[in-house]
Amino acid sequence: MKVVTGAQMRAIDKMTIEEYGLPGIVLMERAAGAVTGLVLRRLREKGWKRVLILCGKGNNGGDGFAVGRQLFAAGYAPRLIFAGNPGELTGDALANFRRARDLSLVEMLDPRRLFESIREADIVVDGLLGTGIRGGAREPYRSVIEAVNAGARYTISIDIPSGLDADGAKQSGPVIKARETVTFALPKLGLLTGDGPAFCGKMHVADIGIPRAVVDTTDSLIQTLRSEEIRTLLPSRKPRSNKGTYGKVVVFAGNREMAGAAYLTAKSAYRAGAGLVYCLIPGDIASVLQTLIPEAIVLPRETSDPTDFGEKARGFLREAKTLLIGPGLGESPAIRAMIFELLRDFEGNILLDADGLNNIRENPEILRACKKTPLITPHPGEMARLCGKSVGEILKDPLTVAREFSRACRCITLLKDHRTVIATPDGSVWLNGTGSTALSKGGSGDVLTGLIGGLAAQGMDLAEAAVVGAFAHGKAGERIGRRMSEYAPLAGEISDGIPEILRMLGEDPA
Image 1 (cartoon, rainbow, N blue to C red):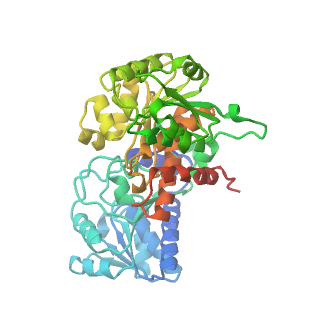
Image 2 (image 1 turned 135 degrees about the vertical axis):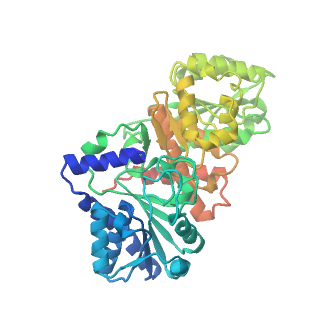
Image 3 (image 1 turned 60 degrees about the vertical axis):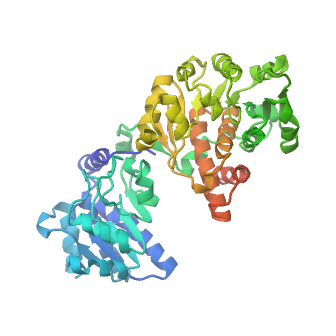
């Protein structure tokens, strides 16, 4: 699913109306119907009755007027407050204003009673401002937004929370903090980047009948995926197969203090479906790994040289499809030299995480020497060390940072954040919308590394394995967080949750 800017969405609407003959008033009615459907579900679920709809002068306000009329037809008595001048209304918004006014549903904004009206409502529907806002909300909208955030019980935004920049620019004024947002046709960039996810709450993407051909003409390299798209990417399991069918993963990880990192990575690669997992680990933690994960093939480093694998281990490296470097590995000149050698010589997929990244931070250009495009999975701190920026700069615009680094170093960059960004050297970007604070635990990144590696070993394109892995990892965090609370889950429990998510994603929706 493409992610678009405000201007791109307006161009899509214009083409749909002018070239495909679908009237704007029909699109508005369908958009309102999607919002009305959600409002009705919440009213019935919670036993609520009182709805307040706040409308501005643009098309979001027009949607709001239509929602009020549809709720009235469903037997409710919504209140509509118009925060504008009727003389400024035009087109479809004006038509829906008149229809709602004819039903005696519309009130003009009275700032003296606004807060009381908001507090009395069970649900506040936000139809104040849309995707065209630049430079922050101005009065009277600014005060209305602040009143909603201070007093609303449950807020649902139409298309985009009022005050939010549709293109993801930094906010310069108040923004509606919605519990849910119904966006139309395609997600807007601002909903998925920066502070957007915190403002939009749960996002619903409503199909309002935009022709597929129109969407296909939109030049957007930014995408997000839903369960139905992820399902089509999962590697298939063949009835006549064996462990060799599903690929070999080599995990170069772990040290005396962090044996668990190698364990979590190897375990998650198996959970993702890899056929064989080899662990290149120090000899003094070999017994720990063999006890924790007897399914893994342990190749201990027996000498004081941390990179002394011997010819047997190098033979496995030649056979493997995927190499995972870094979790709990530590840093040293010998390890750094070995990583550089592997990056230059390994024929398959390479994924670097944690200390794999820390060991190349002085020379990230080594990634360009890989025979196949490698994948890196940094958190903001690791990304800052790799590209010489501050963590603040990374967090300000992770999409641009990931995209620029991928182009410069010819790698796939999975930049972990509240909304993880996956960028490829050609400028394509995926935004992952799954996850929760349950993943904010030590070892969570090791689980993600193993999950992606296990998928790639089965023949998936490495970028797609990163997208599917990030999605499934986030879903596992959400589900375990709901079950145990977001405080409690350990990384190992997130790994144990992967099978349930893969089962769910692999099910035939029919």
